[in-house]
Length: 161
Image (tube, rainbow, N blue to C red; front, side, top):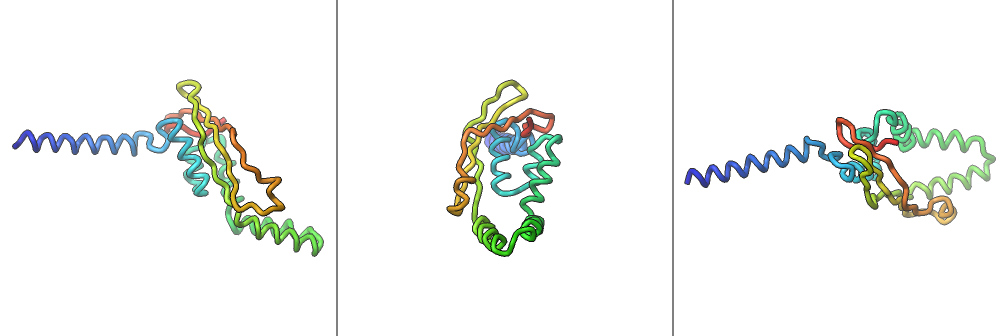
C-alpha cells in the first residue's frame, strides 16, 4: 500500500512539474511555433499587451501606435479630423464607407514556421478579411505568404526583424 501511495505521489509531482514547465518555462513563446501562434492569436484578439510581450523591444513603439490606431476614441477623433477637410457630399459618402468598414474583421493565421538557426525563425502567415464592403474589396484582399521574422531572446521567442 505505501508503494502505491508513493507512486501516486510521484505522478502528482511529475504532473505539477509538467504544468510548471509549460506555463513558466516559456509558455506561449517557448518555441518559435508557440510564439507565432500566440502572436497571431493576440493580434486577432487585439490584445496589444500580449502582442507587445511577443515583440522585441525595438518595435514596442510600433505596437503602441497600433494600439492607438485600434482605440475607438482615437480612431473616431482621427476620422472626424480627416472628414472635416472634405466637402459635405464627399463627407457623407466617406461616412457611409467608414460605417460599413466597422464590420470588417481581419484574421491572422500561421501557415508554418521555419527555424532557420537556433535563434532565428520565420513564420509564414495568411491574412483573411471578412465582411468587406464591395467598394473596399479591391483594397482588402486575402493575402498569404506574409513573412514575420522571430528571434530567440532570454525571455523566449519574439517577433523581430
